[in-house]
Length: 168
Image (tube, rainbow, N blue to C red):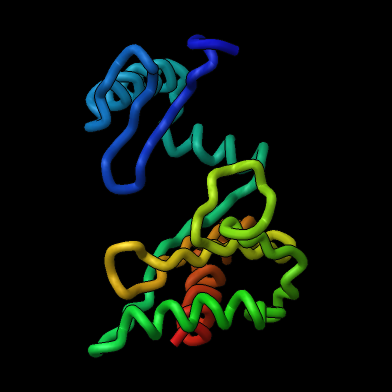
């Protein structure tokens, strides 16, 4: 709790902040720490990949992908808004043989978080978020699949492609 509880923050396109006392989102301090960790593992004849594989073995492997669906034309923003409203009125029931078990609408549901215009879908070991861009006529898609590492990436790509087709 308190300041000592801060662990890690990041933004997918901007870098990492490791400690609240280091305002470095370019990842320089995070890189320094990663080098120190690598040095510790080298003494144990392990690589960072070995360590990552140990983590996967302990907690499982989660593949994450992000992509988007662009809307084009003079009424592209209107098409995007209509698609969002259609998803709210007629939620997806399944995707790639995964039955949707939970949908959270962060704009209307009482999550305790600030209202945001995005939908989160859960289906067993699959979770994906659909978020219309606030600045461009596109849907952003964030997908997370907890699966055996040997098939996770291919399966996640297959699911992503299906979601993209459903949004067109």
